[in-house]
Length: 479
Ligand code: FAD
View 1 (cartoon, rainbow, N blue to C red):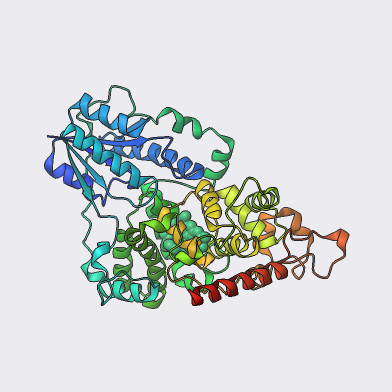
View 2 (view 1 turned 45 degrees about the vertical axis):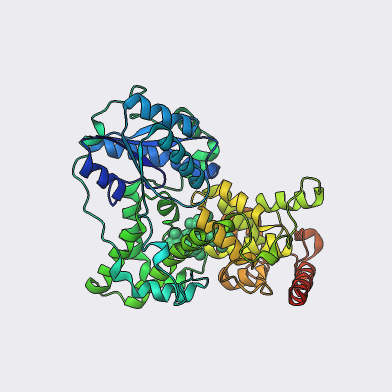
C-alpha cells in the first residue's frame, strides 16, 4: 500500500498523527508539499514557507527520509503524482481558512475522480471543535467562558506520540524530478529576494528552532510574561507565532510542556496559566472560524457590513491614506513604528497590532478587510483564524469584540506602554531627535517647523467615528 502524506501547515517530523498513521499502515510513503503560487496566504508567509520547507527537507534527509516539494496547479500536480506513482491513499491534516479550504476541496474531487482513499486528520486543535460547546450545545462566542471550559478539560487532550527514529519509509520511492532534494523553483528564487532576506534575517526557522525558542522563552521570560507582554520594547512574548502557524511545533505539545512545568518546576502556576490562556486565544480563533466560516470575509455581526468604507481605487484620498498606513507614514509615531517593524521583520507586537488596526478602521474609517489583507501579505505568522479574529475584535464587529464605542488613543497608549520611547526610536530613527516627552506626539507643544503632523486629526476622526457608531446603534434599535 502506497500512501501519500500531503503536508499543509504541519511542517515537522514529530507529533504528526497523519504521518504516524501512514507509518502504521504503509511500507512505502511519499511525503509531499504542493506549492501552488496561486493559492498562498501572502508574500512574507511564503518566504517563511520556503525556508521552513528547505529545513524540513534537511530534517527528513538526516533521518534517512525524503520530503518532496512540488510546484504548479495543485489539482493537476496531485492528479499527476497519484497516477505516476500509483498512490492508493492520501492522508492530510485538516486546516481552516484560505487557501486550505479550497485546496482540501480540490483534493476531495481529485481523490473521487481517481478513486483514491482520502483521509483527513483533525488533529491540530486541542479538543475537537464540535465537542467544546456551551451548556445550550452552541459554540462559545465569548473568550472567557470558552477558556474556562477548555482549561477544565485539559486532562482530556489526546497525547502525542514519541518521535520516530528513522523516516526510511518515506524514501522508498525516488522522485523523478529531484524535488525531494531541493525546493521548487519559485520558492528557491524567492529566498534570494532582498526583502525576503531582510525579513528572514530576524528569524531561525524549523522544528528544532521552535523547540529551542520555547525552551528559551520558558527559562527567560515566562515568569514575567504577565507584566512584560504589554510593552513592545521588551522581548517579553514568545515570538512563536510563525512557528505555530507553520506547525513547526504542535500547540498541544506546548500545553503538555506547560502542564508538566506546573508539577515539576518552582515557577508559579499562575504565571504559566497566563501564557496558556493566551495560547488558548489561538484555539478560540480556530473554533470561531470552524463554526462561522463566513467570518473570514464578513463581519460576525452582520450590522457592521458596510459600516467602514471599503477600499476603493476611485477614492484617491482614501488610497493615499491607506498607502501611508501600509508604509508607516501616518505621522502618529506608534502607528508608524509598528508598520515599520512589520515591514522590516514580518512581525509586530500584539499591542501595536491592536493600535494600528484601530487607527486604520476607527480613525481612517477604512474597512478592516483592507488591513487584514496587508497583514496577510506582510506577516510571517499570517493566519486565517488569528488574523480574522484580531481584526474583527479591534473593529468591534466580531465575536467578543471590544465594545465598538471603545477607541484606542494611540498617543496615550504610546505614552503608557513605551514611556521612554525605546520602541519608537528603534523603528523610527528620524524620531530620535525628540525627547521622551515629545516623542509620542511631536506636533503637540512644538513649533510647526520642528515636527510632523498626523495625516488624520485624531480628535476629529474619533468624534466622527463615535457619531457613526451612535447612528448604527439607533438604526439597529429601530429595526
Ligand atoms: P505570545 O504572547 O507569546 O502568545 C503565544 C501564542 O498564542 C502566539 O504565538 C499565538 O499563536 C497565540 N496568541 C497570542 N495572542 C493571540 C491572539 N490575540 N489571538 C490569537 N492567538 C493568539 N496572530 C497570528 O498568529 N497571526 C495573525 O495573522 C495575527 N493577526 C492579528 C491581527 C490583529 C489585528 C491582532 C490584534 C492580532 C493578531 N494576531 C495574529 C494575534 C497576536 O497579535 C499574535 O499571535 C502575537 O502577537 C504573536 O506573538 P507571540 O508569538 O510572541 O505571542
